[in-house]
Amino acid sequence: MLITLKNVTKLFGNFKALDNVSLEIEKGEFFIILGRSGSGKTTLLRLIAGLEKVTSGRIIIDNEDVTDLPPSKRDVGMVFQNYALYPNKTVHENMAIALENIKISKSEKENRIVEISKELDIYNLLDKYPGQLSGGQQQRVAIAKALVRRPKVMLMDEPLSNLDVQLRYSARKLIKKIQREFNITTLYVTHDSNEALAIADRICVIDKGKVLQVGKPEEIYSSPSNITVASLLTSMSFIRVDGKTIGVRPEDVILGEGQYEGTVTNSEFWGSYYLIYIDYNGNEIRAMSKNRIKEGSKIKFELTNYKVFNHD
Ligand SMILES: Nc1ncnc2c1ncn2[C@@H]1O[C@H](COP(=O)(O)OP(=O)(O)OP(=O)(O)O)[C@@H](O)[C@H]1O
Image 1 (cartoon, rainbow, N blue to C red):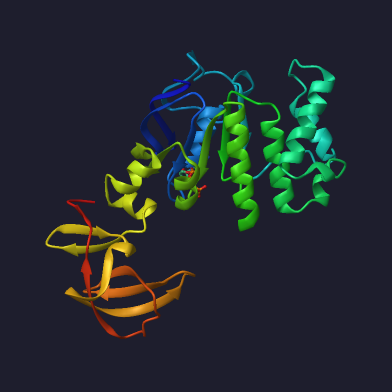
Image 2 (image 1 turned 30 degrees about the horizontal axis):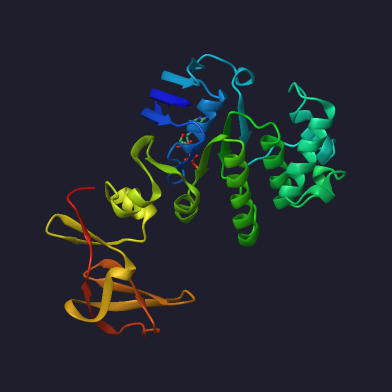
């Protein structure tokens, strides 16, 4: 177990940002924290980094209780949304600073800078200053700066938020490649469920400061423990009947005939299919269709597969 959180609670005044969180993260794991805005994701990372003090509970990294240690005494690299680059230093100098206290030769340092900057496609920017770079380029420099140290633990808070879709895909593949290569235990915060499902070894879903579920992407996707997890991590829509809630994915709604009848409120073109929104007694159901269906049409449908939730 590389990182253990034991009953960690964080209060800001009277507000409980984290509520009795216990987690165990394995060495080399790519562990994603997923949750809505304000659920406590960043706070969790800041506590592990030592940028914030726990109100109660313990944090253990590699068998060492680091709860009361300052950030510099924890071998933890960080990339946050607001990437901190020195504005009056070049990209190369920024990366070199990250390696200052690392006991390796000068040539090894240079090799690492060259290697990582080529991987992240910023090699031709090494002589530029942060102010001369686009947001996405700065973000890649921040990632490079953190990875070049090859820390035991890497904390990433929405590190790809400024990248366009294409770069986002390639950057996250790269992060994962480097993470694997150097066996860097990574905690990665996102509110993008597709990203979480695509790249996590395990996902931890948090809401209102509490851990709702921890598991492999496939496990959480197929067996969400409650409605909040299901709505965050799956494409399920919900039908509330008789005190129960039925969750159904678009691919499991068969249109054309069946025991349910609703009204089409919208059709969206999603490339290989249309996503059809149906109002069924005030519940919004999403279904897939080969064709666009006119708004206002009455439509029958059946559910081939669904999950019943007993409570919220
Ligand atoms: N320094 C602080 N003082 C007071 N309240 C804070 C402080 N930092 C965070 N909070 C509150 O704690 C809650 C959790 O914040 P946090 O930044 O961890 O959420 P988050 O899940 O990372 O959200 P987002 O996805 O929007 O970044 C929020 O309600 C926030 O307002």
